[in-house]
Image 1 (tube, one colour):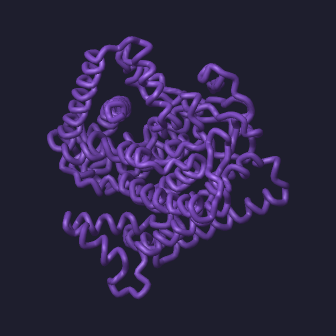
Image 2 (tube, rainbow, N blue to C red):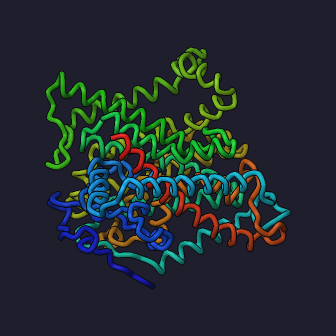
Image 3 (cartoon, rainbow, N blue to C red):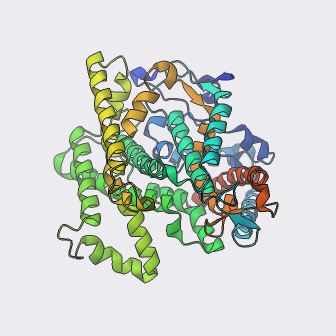
Length: 512
């Protein structure tokens, strides 16, 4: 068992003290060794850095939501400009870097297009040509990755074992992403409900991460808005154009985009009201001053109201807000687009709200957990969380929801899809010993969640996700193909994050 200690002193160049007093930041996830290996010599800006000491991990929306890969704060851009000045890079060198990144990105899109339309493929699921699904392979993948991760455990610094740290959030996303890709690859419908819960958890994290960020920074600028939309949709948009896949079929991205916009609008309205009407203090990240609880409550209330207003039709007469304003616009794109958008968003239209509500009380809860909370209160929180989990399992197994290939379950998922999360978080942080330990391979996967999600459809899978891609054009060689294609998949994922970050930095530096 390999246990590595993560030194924040080495990463940031300064001593990181305990988070209990709120005087410093938790260490950010370091750049992966694989990224360093694949990076071109001398192109330091080409790698995706997670070690900037100036960025507060407690208020990074990117840290907790589906899309990771670097934050978009002004300081990061200033540092990039300073690096250019410090290294004496000329305009010609920057132009060459831009051209190289663009060519690499075009080559990446070509790989995905060839994988989608030109490569040999076999029927799902992998490893069998007889059964309609392969649950044994799904379990094998999960157990194998768990055992490999046990050999690569990293220990965070003393004092950084906070409840739901950035590294822990990345690890959580990594586990869900592995389960999700394996589910698609093996067509294991036995885990349909848990996979739906993972989708809801990603939306929960979007609500949580953005709530923590906005209530700590009050950064509702258009620049922040555009940067987040860029990060979520840039690669997705070009994949859609190059492979002919409708944007909506990357529905994780659609969910993250929709809920981010709603949160930005809801909390922004609350901030405007607090500033011009109520006179509430403005949050200030550098002074560790968050929005007041009245502003948080107003923001949550607006978010709940918007979600119910859009997705609910009280009279069931087809005259709801969605039917009147959104459906006609989406049908103009295509009827399939409108139907798929409605189905996917309706299944998780409430999922970001519990995360947003938890973000409202996250800071005091984080600082008090576990020993700042009485034993009786901890037992009470645990029993309530366990009860929510039992309710979710019981409802999902009711005859009216457990059959018909999951179609009937979709109606109830908005209400029970996130009830398992409190139990998971409490179990994951039951002891400081657990909070300090991170499974490094899974955390690394979580750092690349967006790329793993998007590229699975064109490299691991193919033909609109109905078949699996083969390098050896024989279905009898399913497991060998899985290993070979998996290696290509990982390399392309790494380069995709690297190149998109380079293009993002270039775009924002040019726009200043």
